Amino acid sequence: MPAEFRQIVEGTLLVFAALLPIVNPFGGAPVFLAMTADCTPELRATIAKRIALNAFLLLLASVSIGTYVLDFFGLSVSVVQVAGGIVVCAAGWELLRAESVTREPPTSPPGAAEIASRAFYPLTLPITVGPGTISVAITIGANHPRNVQALLVNGTADLIGATMIAATVFICYRYADRVLRLLGETGTSVLVRLSAFILFCIGVQIFWNGATALLGTVPALNAH
Image (cartoon, rainbow, N blue to C red; front, side, top):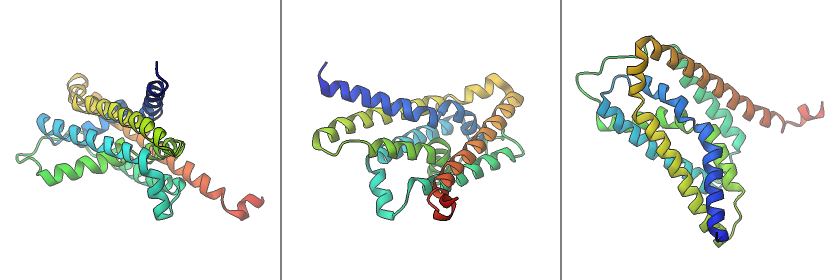
């Protein structure tokens, strides 16, 4: 096996294995189902496709140019974690407090602009690709060697890895409505509430990770 091919395979597995558990499309499927309960199956499939595309672009951008974007704005990964953790907490809390997780589809379907908006926020960011995923992706990209050969090899691995994760997201979300039919209204409600609570806890953990790192930079606290 050529060395470059082996590096591509290893890089692809690294991206996929490191990011998939954080993206967690299997756990996100019930949340997606709850937030698209007012959509027809056809419209839900369209939104799932848009989320998968958005997730692919976000992951690839985070791995490839994430460190440069943060440097340009003078931001640290810890700040991204704190801000993102708050957003994730807000999304989980809103879903926890929702009166019903199953709603009847409206007589008139949402327009294209509303579909695109909902598919990106909050379904792609921060529910599917959250600050934890972005910070890990940026870390992976920051560890890539800076030369032409490494750029080609790692770029190919990042592209394939992001594609595999996006495909997994699409499959899990596209067929999430089958969960509704299998579990029924009560079972779906329980699963969604549990997923929402876990989502809230993930937001708290992301916030705490970022806050802890930031507090560690305060001289007065380090002196103690």
